[in-house]
Amino acid sequence: MSSNLINDEIVRLQNIGKVFDGYIMFVLIIFGTIGNLLNLFVFIRIKTLRQMSNSIFLIGSFLGSLVSLWSSRYPRSILNITGVDPLVGSIVFCKFRWLFGRWGLNMPFTCICLASIDRFLMTSRQVYYRRLFSLKRAYIMVILSSIIYLIICIPDGMYYSGYLCTALVNDRALYKQFIAYFNLILTNILSMIILGTFSILTWYNLRSTRQNRQINHLQQQVNRMMIAEFALAFITTLPNFVYNIYLQITQSMIKSQLRLAQESLWSSISVIMSFTMNVGTFYVYIIVSRPYRRNVRTALCFKRQNQVTSHQTQLQHGTTIQTFGNMTTRL
Figure 1 (cartoon, rainbow, N blue to C red):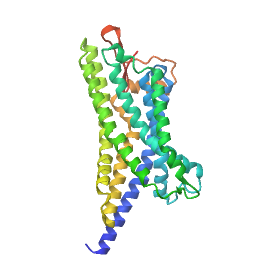
Figure 2 (figure 1 turned 120 degrees about the vertical axis):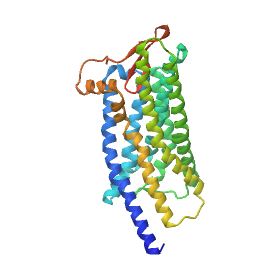
Figure 3 (figure 1 turned 180 degrees about the vertical axis):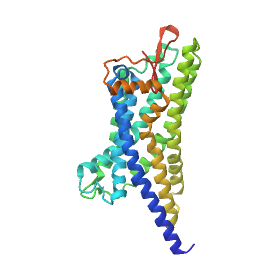
Figure 4 (figure 1 turned 120 degrees about the horizontal axis):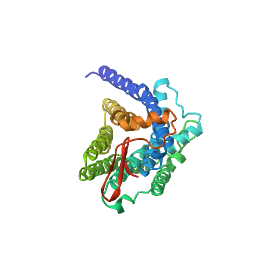
């Protein structure tokens, strides 16, 4: 390949990457903002939903998704569309970006994993397990997770400052390596293992409780939510997981400009897919769950009915399981 052809290919790849990072991401930000705000409105508006421990984890996930979209992806999207960096000249937005960027990235995965554990415990036959995750404990776990992630992000909030919002300290190799491994292990490997494991265990709990035809319908509803939730997390996380592994393996290699452009495009596409998790939750719930669609209509119509009709069944020892959209919980 001649140098001119190589340069043209590099420019073409860079332009494609700008389309993904700019226009496509901006569309996802709009849809994600609408979806997460509607999720928050529904879960806060309907009394029955906001009184469940599982809902606390999901609300934390929705908040984290909103913060992640607007702190880390919005500035990059605007920069690629207009060529103007929103972080330049705004010290408040600069600090917000670097202090809450990784917080918003990690909180949704953490809260969804906690929700999957809660769902497993609530469908257990053991009373002790069903009482482990109370509403108060759910609040504590979400708050502690939030504080831990904020502490981890404090160095970024300190390093990035000034009119151009650039790092004031250049020698940050150790910290950056720690963050890279932390994100790889937490948001990719660990979250996929936890979500997959406890989704399967929840399905097993429901399957082992065979009492009447109604429980079979309940199994279908919860199983549909579980499969949809895990499939969304797995499909959207896998490309970014593979890319991060690739970066760790090849970080000491000398790469050509063409290869760097190819990697940059791969990074843009994998990031788009990974942020689908922050964008598509509401729309997945709407598609796969009729009870959640009823919850949305109830909330948007400002009905005074707090008890939303859903499929119920009586398990052993008088435990009632109720399905709300994407979760199962004990009343």
